[in-house]
Amino acid sequence: MKGMVTYDMMEAIRNSNEWMGASARAFASYPVWGLVPHPMFKVMSAWGRVTERSFARMVIKPDWNISSVVTEDGRDHVVEEVVEMQRPFGDLLRFRVSGRPEKPRRVLLCAPMSGHYATLLRSTVTSLLPDCEVWVTDWHNARDIPVSEGKFDIEDYTLYLTEFMRHLGPDTHVIAICQPVPLALAATAYLAELEPESQPRTLTLIGGPVDPDAAPTEVTDFGERVTMGQLEHLAIQRVGFKYSGVGRLVYPGLLQLGGFISMNMERHAQAFSDKIVAEAHGDGGERDKHNRFYDEYLSVMDMTAEFYLSTVERIFKDREIARNAFMVDGHEVDIGKITNVAVKIVEGEKDDISAPGQCLAALDLLTGLNDSQKASHLEPGAGHYGIFAGKSWRNNIRPLVMEFMDTHSGNGGSGKRRLTVAASNG
Image (cartoon, rainbow, N blue to C red; front, side, top):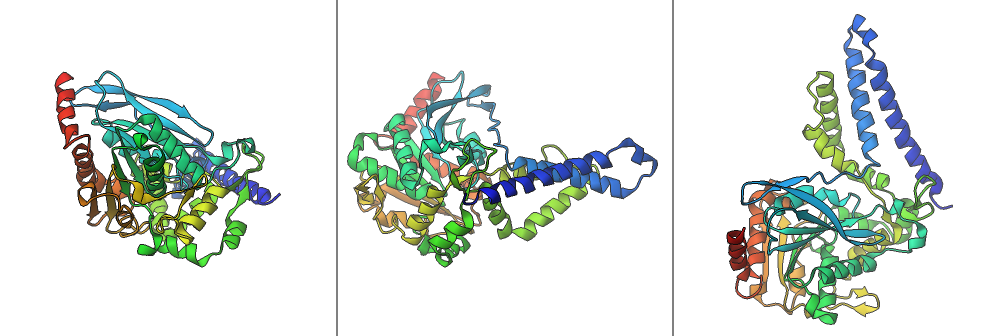
């Protein structure tokens, strides 16, 4: 069967490297080598620890690890993860903060399905929880979804978003980050035309490819160079026998990870070299900066083949969103039908994945909004990750997004008044 052998081969290589790392760590850590203290054994043990951990992380879904949050009363409040809507390909997950009045800001975070789990937004969720009620789209790994559950492409993704928005109601503020930006825009337009009472209050689009041709990057250049036939032949494989999704056509997470690393090979090689040296000197830590970053970065998930291929063909090659010609379930979506949802664009000056201009193109499509309903921000010096999870997000972008939500909550900034009332009742 197409790709099943190569899928299992990749898993076998990953498993073998994890085993070699564990073996080297165990062998070099025997106490007897203390009789012949040679730095070789410390380096071997350090290499083994780093290698074992790195290859093990590739098949582990990270935990959210958000156990509590400090609110305006100065106390720690327990955070509970609650699945409010459970679907085959992704859940609507709520972070419920116990023991505090419910916040008037209701935020839906649309997490990307682009190789990493939704936990990539952990710091984003943590930064919003003190002031907001937060929900997130928690996408599932395609390798764990049986073939009997059917397909999942960008139209299905868009319909999932409309279902989640409908569930949360019209007082919701939607924040879409990276890959789901054009689809969140389409989902909002879909609701604006067919179910206007379900539209969110605001839509914040952060670093996503609404018009990939507006500012070409290495990612968009790749999409232009490769034909769909070549892409399907090179990238698509069938899930092997080890997982519940056996036989499902996917774009494997391990293959994606190879692409991620190749984009910055020298930086990653230096990071692992430095980590091995630190471990050999006894300076490594379980939760040091290296492990915190790579525990998340190396944890990858498979995407369904139809989702990956339809994203490349319809978003990047045919530019259906940019041309306002996107179809969802047989219905042609018109982004100009959005008339009551305020939209804010956020981009990073040094974003090398979704360059400045790609996301900003959304404002030209929003012909149904007046200038007071549209806003944009270009963060100086910020890369892709920084605009939703780094220092730029925490210090500059988050306050601007919160202010934008408040300004467009109800009539003339009623969100600010509601916040004051909620705080006084707390």
